[in-house]
Length: 485
Image (cartoon, rainbow, N blue to C red; front, side):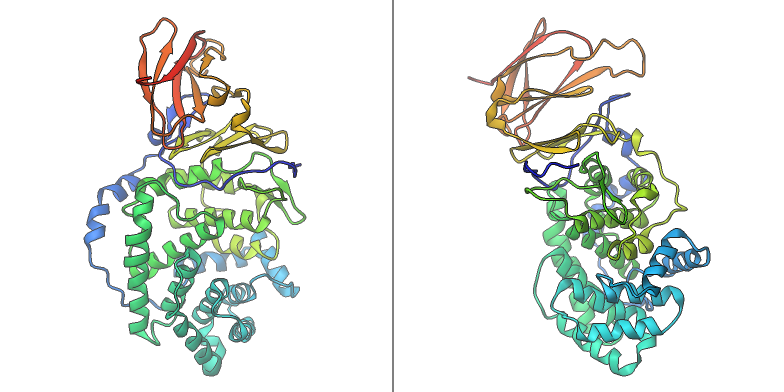
């Protein structure tokens, strides 16, 4: 099980590139580039200049349940899929759902019955519309159930949604929820709807969020924020016909692989299902709601673009039924987004190392008993044999070996030796060893001396990490010193 004694450290942010260390050494970019990603990069500037029409012409339901997705969910009901059976059994059994408006509205739409919608609306008129999570549910209930709930309840909900557009708040959850509200009442108050949608896309996304993504930053620091962003992507594309990934193709291209590498190798066995646990801080048990939202975000990313190669690896990761969310919180998200008929690629062929944006994530393998290492913002953490262990960088920690990768720590000295792998005799064995030195000065040039080679200069990244590559199996001493000293 996970150790409760030692502190973890982070939830990761946007990457620049990945490196495969195992059977073949190569950059993630060479693996993951797709026609779709290239198209996003090529037309990003054109999108930034184009005029967007914020008048809404789509018919309800506008939020998440576009015609294609609703048809898929109804086929899931007809086929009695395991996701539908689990969701339906909880709803029929009157389970206490964490998000009753969301669950009842979804159940009603797929069943084609009005009674659950009326129950959802009665809950919604009593809900707190100032809370972003509840406002999201109010908008979903109004959008999905408007034809079933009558004028009185409909008018009450419409007024609550309209008043929410005057509120402030810049979190991803708040903007997502008010965007839902604006789309839901587009037929009732077209001008207020257009004004808020324009503000959300032009100001919050294009002026405040997009520059951060282009710079490799991650404004979505929790999995709840990440999931809210995916919902925002969906409803904007479905109703305004704008793909918000344009202009940040690199960030989104690498989001899927980074998600996979951010989990500890060993799953957490909960009562309802197993969870993959994202790296986290604090002396506590994992947050299973955060883990559920992380999976929901991945399901929604695949639903957004199933053809992108990184998302095909992500789909291969998601298809394992032991991680299917069966509980009263996760099942509605699982049923809404999962597409078990979409083929995926085996994630074991995906790169298992990420270095970029001042952080390092690496696994010794894709096995669940693998060793995992993470380094970010001067903090380090190891997960091995079911335990999280914080690494004290000032305590001269010993090097950490993870297959072809070896992590050295500057506080333990500026010298090390290569040749920890046997010399490759077969094409399938690693041709390179990859050394990382963590804890150096950020954005600083260092002189690197390798036995029997000319000295060369290398530069650390903004996190103080230096990456060096050597031919596998060659024994040599390596010495570093700051350039000019």
